[in-house]
Image 1: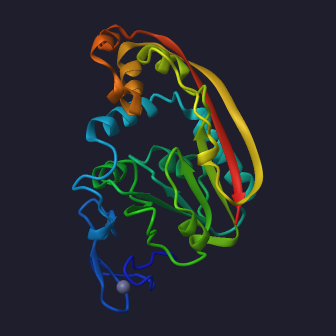
Image 2 (image 1 turned 60 degrees about the vertical axis):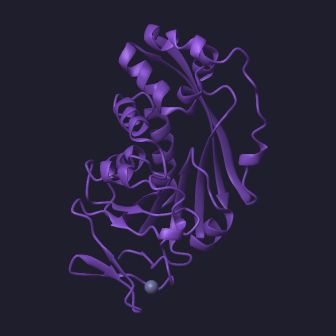
Length: 269
Ligand SMILES: [Zn+2]
């Protein structure tokens, strides 16, 4: 049974024909590709919120080459070990859906229900191409359209979260899997683009909840061709910060070793 809630009144949504409705008759139509648009107009920052289409396509192409399998695997292994029985899993800021889809594929547990939420309609439409057996939702992570304390696992990979909404949505014994980049993450890309690399404090991305566990995942990955390297660059914000005099690096990108250096923190609320 799904745990979707109306983004306007937070009452339970139920499927009626091709629409989801709440008891107050707020109605949300299913798209042809079966995603649900639960983004309210006031939640939209621009007409096309979220990552650009170019960045989404690059991201999908790069991730599907398996370069980030280790990130996906570490998350999936944790869930398999710690969540037994019926489990509601929400992936916030799921983008084009790679990590959510891979969760479903590798965990292969019929007792798990998956939700992938992103503010970009384009991203969610792409996600439906992986599978339609995930609740793909266009929505805002500041107004998550699920019932109070209904999610047992909330994943937030490289995405901005809202503390109040996490508290509201997480179930009593639930946990949050928060994945953030450490300063050395993709340092080789930063060296290509910037004259000087600023090491920022990562304090601002820590959440004010109880830490159950936290660990770093550090791995070197070899990228073996221009196309993949360019896709990696395009899926990062760095691509959009390249100065004119550095433009040539884009054309000369070849095989390269990159550092994956991320932190996985498990929180309880
Ligand atoms: Zn409603």
